[in-house]
Length: 377
Image 1 (cartoon, rainbow, N blue to C red):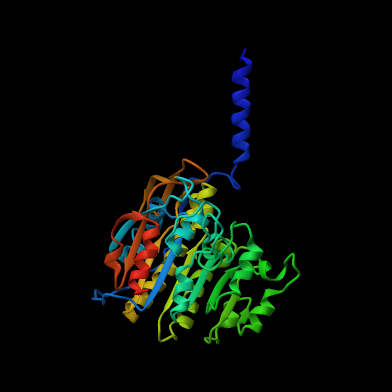
Image 2 (image 1 turned 90 degrees about the horizontal axis):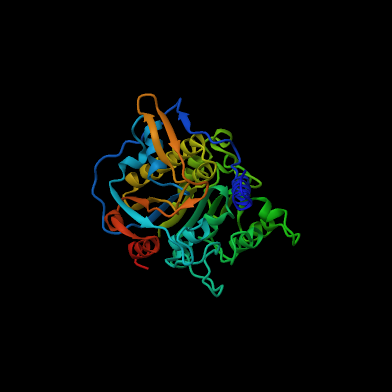
């Protein structure tokens, strides 16, 4: 017969397991049925400093997530073109394991903050972001996300709030900037608000052209532009289709008209969600979708010659390990250590003028400092 103390421990363990149960059943295996083509880039020499920076963040993307994509795409991703590689240490100000708010803020501001904070310090004081500083120095700016545009990672580049959960306040912060184009979900945070305001009307009063699909904006290139692709978060890639690469191309089309250059952050949000679900199909399909956006950015940079492309992550999610796979069969088997984030370093890939600056092992805050150096700010 079990003693009373042991029985309490077992019951407690079962409760914890149920509390952190996954949204969908653990799925370890995935076989890709359709690879995507890789852009062709010629070897070329770049200048020392870029006029433009395209920062792509694969939320929750560690080396296992990247290699799962490489395997499922028969051995090659667009990321493979990026020969300058470093590693970012992702810890936050108060936790060994960061969340996306603090992880994004470290990259956007060069300061480590507590988990949950959006570009504010411990006293709640706003910290200027690379997007805001770029704007102040005459550059065009943009944000793209496959989540709500008010979610932690994009928010950390444009908003200043003590909690990532303050979605309506984050939405209001967009009106305090002159961002040239933003594309993502989260329309309800602008329109169905507790204060009764319709911030899309205020955006229009500021001169924004507001759309509810990328297609509706296809003949418009004059900034400022706001494109809402979903009321809340965008659905998974199987439902949203090529939204991310279309949004990337649209944003680059608009921003490249500015003679002073631009800064843009583009997020593949749902790699992270696949990690939380311990779902290999979810991770791989989102990873492949993100890589298509990377390809679009690289193609633009190769043609432009003055654009630095940086690809990194805010943290790794799921503790993913690849336990089996096949390049020929485009199959991947994953195993996981957690449904949360982990503390491991994440890669930083770079391409274009100044790419060599991003080699090495450094804190996540250094990405901001290196971008500031590249822009001479």
